[in-house]
Length: 84
Image 1 (cartoon, rainbow, N blue to C red):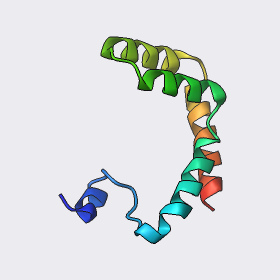
Image 2: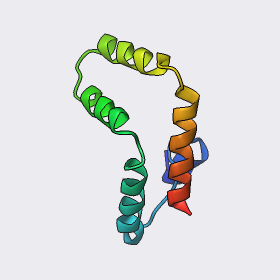
Image 3: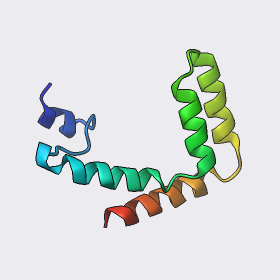
């Protein structure tokens, strides 16, 4: 599919010309830094995992921790602030 189609169906959020890549990387890096350290550590640990069962179990444990909605909202608010 084309890049435009990917954006239309939600597979891509933006289309950025090559000249805008550096600014995009800066923006995305700032957004990533708003994640709690524990979340970043967990995501990086899961990235290298070869076991789908372990991945799913870790996801369930993470989601089961009290305050999921508040953590997601906090991250979203911080990330959106970075975009402004």
